Length: 222
Image 1 (tube, rainbow, N blue to C red):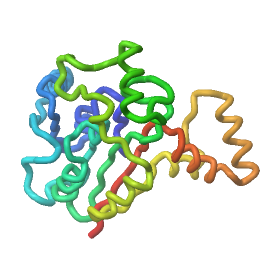
Image 2: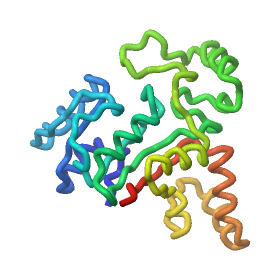
Image 3: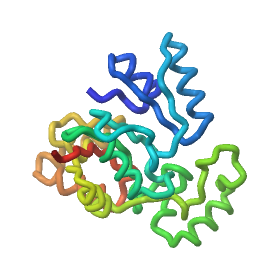
Image 4: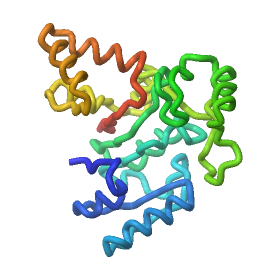
């Protein structure tokens, strides 16, 4: 099973479940945080302060790569996927998140509707609301126009060009009846949609025009 990326820290959580883990992060401070969390559990993990576009590993080194909340921040998403494909063994998997270009609630600035606007207008609104991340200490704090968001089909096509088969993890949970929802109203709506046979199309419509983040599994083709 995948460890929950929202838990303690995905590298530490995976190691606690018995995986052999190598951690990487572009931000030196985050590397230190990983080391601190591992130490709290009596572990020492190999941690590399590197960019995802230039991974310091031999080809076919890993069975699984986890890239959670990463691709929107890198300089070259295409090169990141090239590197993930290179270091994965044939049949290996990559778990990653991709921000929807049409996300109604932006996951970085937490302002509704700004992704439906031209970037110039959106950044003006961000500044007016005092949400700008300019001059912050972390190097990965970027302006909205510098972040890489994707339409769902656009990203799927890009991943396929790198030799990946793409699975939408949320859609798989939906089909199995195990997609969690904290709100009772949403569970009721989902039940109604399932009853009348349109739950799948409704989900894909939401994914295209509203959803904030895609949670995807990429499998390297052999």
